[in-house]
Length: 230
Image 1 (tube, one colour):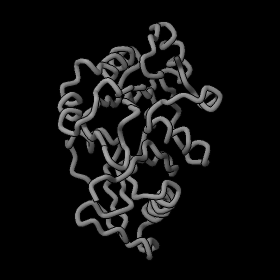
Image 2 (cartoon, rainbow, N blue to C red; image 1 turned 90 degrees about the vertical axis):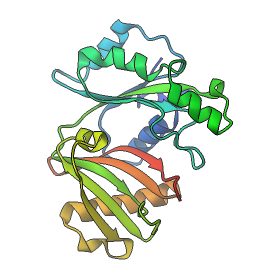
Image 3 (spheres, rainbow, N blue to C red; image 1 turned 45 degrees about the horizontal axis):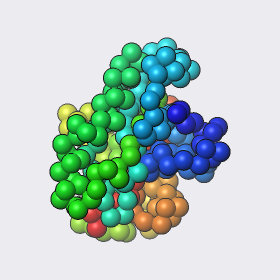
Image 4 (cartoon, rainbow, N blue to C red; image 1 turned 120 degrees about the vertical axis):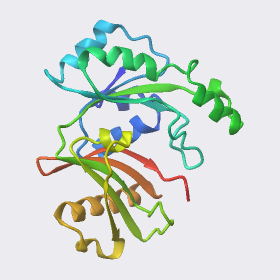
C-alpha cells in the first residue's frame, strides 16, 4: 500500500518511526522534501511504483530508506542496521526498495536482535521514497553535543552539496558548536538551523539527531530521530 500525506491520517497504520516523524513534521509546518511510503509487508507492483515516481518529474533523484516499527526509539536506535540508498535514479528505485525491505537477508539485523534479546519476527519495515533536493550544503545536527554529552550545546556538521559524502565518509565536515543560550553567535544559516534544532527538541521532548539540507536559502528537514547514546 502506498501511504502519502493525503491519506496517512485516514489509514491510521504503523509506517515506522522515520516516516511517522516526517508526516508529523509536515503537519507542524516544517519544510520536508516530497516523499511517499510503502507500507510494511506490502506487495508493490512495479508499474504502481513507477507511476508514483513519475509524479516527481524528470531527473529527480531519490533517497530510499527503511522506516521500521522498532528503530529510533529512546531505547534501541538500530543505527546502521537497515540499508539506506541515496542519490537513486528513478529506474533503480524498485531494486533499492526490495533491498531495503529484505529482513530475511539482513545479517546485521539478526545480530542486533540477538544481542538485544529482541524477536526479529516483530520487526516490520516500511520504505520511504523521498525526493533529494539539490542542496547547496547539507549535514547533521544534534541538540546535544555527542562528543561529551553537553545538553546545553548544539552540534552541527555540514558539507557542500548533498549529504551523501558526509554519510559515506568521503568528505570531512565543517563542525560548529553553539551554546543554546546564545545561538545568535552563529552565522545566518547556522543561527536559523540551531533555532530549529532547539524547537524540534522541545517538540519531541528529548535530544534529537537531525538530517538537514539548505537549497536556495531554504532549510529542509530530512529526518529526525532521538539521540540514544546519552
